[in-house]
Amino acid sequence: MSSPSIVTLAKYYNNLKLTVGEAMQTQSAAQVARSLQGAVTIKFCEYWGAKYEDPTLHAGTWGGARNVVFSDEDQLVVEVRCSLDACISAC
Image 1 (cartoon, one colour):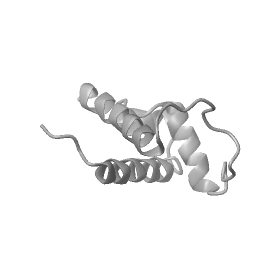
Image 2 (image 1 turned 90 degrees about the vertical axis):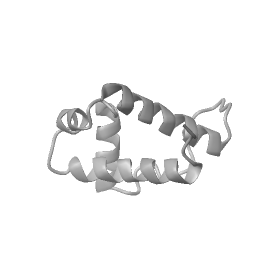
Image 3 (image 1 turned 180 degrees about the vertical axis):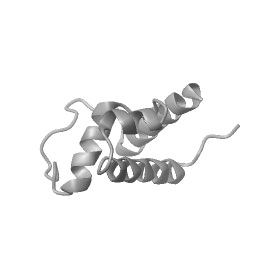
Image 4 (image 1 turned 90 degrees about the horizontal axis):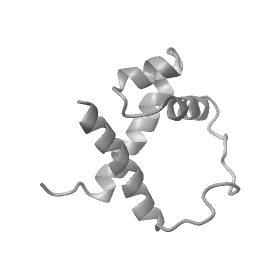
């Protein structure tokens, strides 16, 4: 089985963030996380719900990991792969 491409993973992750943000407008974080069968955490839902309401939330350059060991591309792959693995194992 071949690994999905970076572009595919990025599209999935962006779609996931948007879906969670939209769902948070009418449901609680716990309900959204439960509906995604453990693929995301409640904190993930809370953050992307707030970001959906206010796109300027954390828009600056401050913050983030201080000792990043991955390139931006590799970091995205790791994050999305972990989410996918969690989703697959929950099914």
